[in-house]
Image (cartoon, rainbow, N blue to C red; front, side):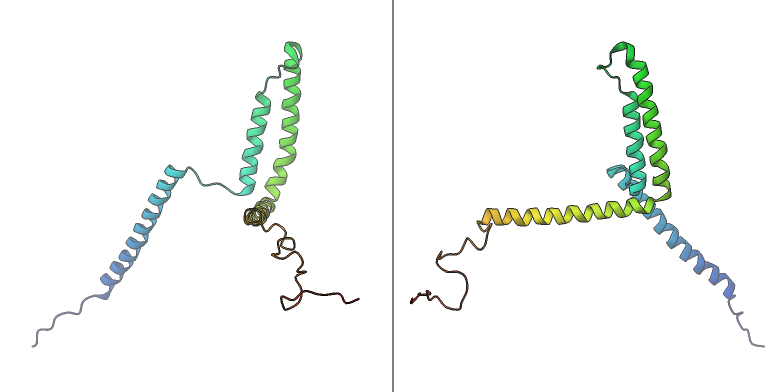
Length: 162
């Protein structure tokens, strides 16, 4: 009778591989969460979508306007004027918030378009400033020889024979 070793059971190895894969994913997720927490602590919370930021702006402006005390109206008209301001602010919020909620993508597109317009404007301004600083604001006027119309192939001067 020969002594044979029993073959190892393949089932214990498979869970070990799965556990290793899970451990790697878990460690990566923990590292990512730690990095996000570090960045949040350093830079503050990341900005939300354009719609969320607009809602925050509307809320902040509404709170500031509702808390204003108007010295121009005097002490008698103060409470009545303040009530009117609160009512107008609430009506404006009631009109704006449903639009923001229904169309959040529109505000993202508007924000992207605004960024593109700003980049185009900045490029145009930088190009104009470059021309001003180098003295070539109008390339047609900045020729070396004022008699040279800028046409032709040679340095010759046109002579009228008539």
